[in-house]
Length: 132
Image (tube, rainbow, N blue to C red; front, side, top):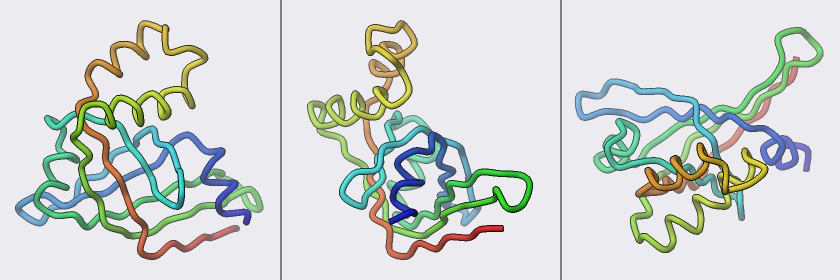
């Protein structure tokens, strides 16, 4: 499936959450895609984590290209939940960081890992692709 290969090879997902006042909040994030779910390491202090705590509805987008025919993307909607159990968080966070760093011994990787106290798990309800 081309969509799954695309999702697994890309590095940036934009996640949109809704705050308590109904305003959208969108941010680019690093992620991992496993068993048809997206996993995003973060901290409970972030707006996206706070928003998900109050409203589990999210949308997301992964896309590439600026000139046709190289434009391709996947977007969707889904439900998100926060994983807060420390061992599970650290295990998932390490898998995410391994996609972006050659080694978890890297100083930046260690700083990110130590700051990660939750993981956002997105279960997509609908996904669509486009190509131009």
